[in-house]
Length: 545
Picture 1 (cartoon, rainbow, N blue to C red):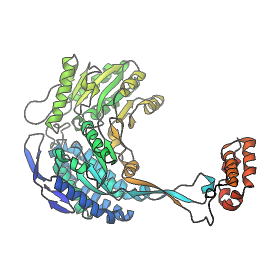
Picture 2: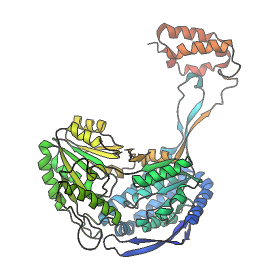
Picture 3: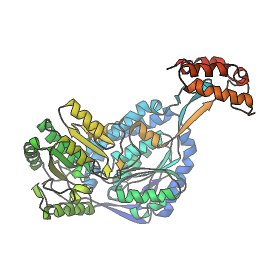
Picture 4: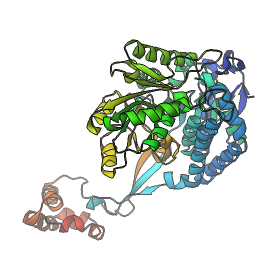
């Protein structure tokens, strides 16, 4: 088991112990030899040293290594699923389904499409005077990327972020969450064994209290952070002090709005999975459900029955549906949210209190009667709790769904195409699904990110690649053998040329015709404009109305 950091391809044991515990039993799994500020600086230095050579590699070479990484992950998927289940507490089937499968899908997508996603892009100039230019975009790497990831998806989120960064030609310092540090270190070892050059991907077992050493390092070009709003805000403030860009994927208070014409069986299945998968410890978990009154009672009955049928137990058992929560602190948040609501008159139709015995178990809980002012309806619960609320109409459901400081994902449930289009158009979130929720995270072409306190920027797919790229607009002019029309000297003839160019380009009718006539007789046009090139943009001149 990997228990040391990986810096410049070498195992580095630091002076700061980081203990990893099994959340199902509380037993110690192993202790990582975490690094301190000095070790963090060494990792950044290694990444900076590796950057020139790695950024110069071809797409073909990067695709080859991404493919090798995928091959190893597929070969060792059982071991990784077991490690995720052991350390994070999620059922082993779910670890395969969500963590391992999602990571594989991302690697496969990049290894097949990277050259199409990030290759140079030609764009035809719109301005007629620039018609002879060769223009377009290059997508160049930024430099050293800091990747800071959470404990709820200790494999799939790092794979997506690391693969995006290195595929774009950057080098990385990766800090996994302390609660799942062993999974992060094992992933770093897998990348090393895949053949990535030393220093391209460095993994530091770094306690949270020392993360500023990574965020503040001036050699870090950008920070990718996934985690809580509180810590994300801290990272953004520290980065802003040195004008370092950040991509933040933070919390959510995601809502589902159920129309009266929804398929109740399909909707109940989707809501229960969307709320309780990964014990509700998902940024896009369903944490609020608004149901039109005509179907409120029958849907609630189905949801409660399905929730009661969920099997809570050891994450290593193949038939376990819901495992323990990952950290004591997060279970405490869930307890506080539910207890406040219950004390104010809400009712728990299932669950409602932590389980007895060892482990961080909290049963799937369906709440009714919760008030919008309660924390369970307002703040991110990040646990297995589903408040269900009746509403008079889809209008009310959408309005209440949008009345949140978060806006990560949202879903609408309906059989009507017209209502589906309303959901897509009106729900305020970075990801909107109809008759599905949370699963779009797995799709590698889909961008992931939100509004408000849900974060800044996007991850996944091409937009995720652009987050870790310098989008460079390129202009090449090999055809001008004379001064351009806009070059010095400024004189009376240039004034006439500009006066005529304005109506020529932007006016309509006879005014445009007059502008063309006046422009054609200026000395600037006759001596400095490439007339054959402009003919290719004749459409700009012949649209009179």
